[in-house]
Image (cartoon, rainbow, N blue to C red):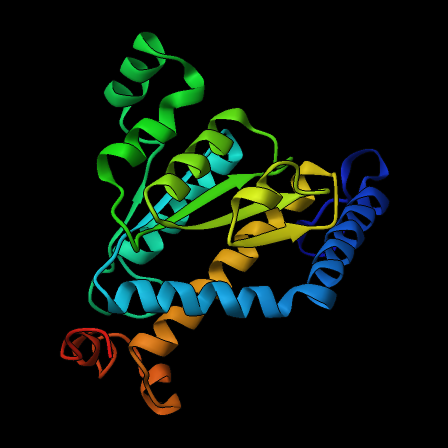
Length: 225
């Protein structure tokens, strides 16, 4: 074929298009009814950062990877340079995780860390595609007991997370990959909304290339507004 491009093996093009349609349907199905909850979560995060609070992310497997991904976006940067924001993934310290799992139980790995690190007004963000992960549920219960704001990202019917979260980002799908794809999209939207609220920039500054008003201008902006 032209340019050396080969057809997908085994006629996989149709399957690729079908998966893309499933993805698009999951995204559209979520945003058709849930824009208001995304707005509400963004407002909670902005308020927490303005008050000097910390976001605590946690989940299992792919959701653990999403927890780490989103924490990194806040601590380091999302699209442009700006001051660091306080966020922690509770999924990364193997000594803490294994000691809690060994001395207590795997269901306690997030709850114990929240008991140690969480403060009233902090935000606990639990991710579970089913809404039923026992350690995520215990983490949210511990967060509620310590007066943290509880936010959940789930799929399907939301499981027990419905009763434990002040705000629940619920993807109306039981297909784990599609739920995870919507979760990270919503996570990126939240990062963008938080940056826009705390570090407003005009469109011209946002388009400025790195090194010519981009990074240097961002570094001068100081604390969140």
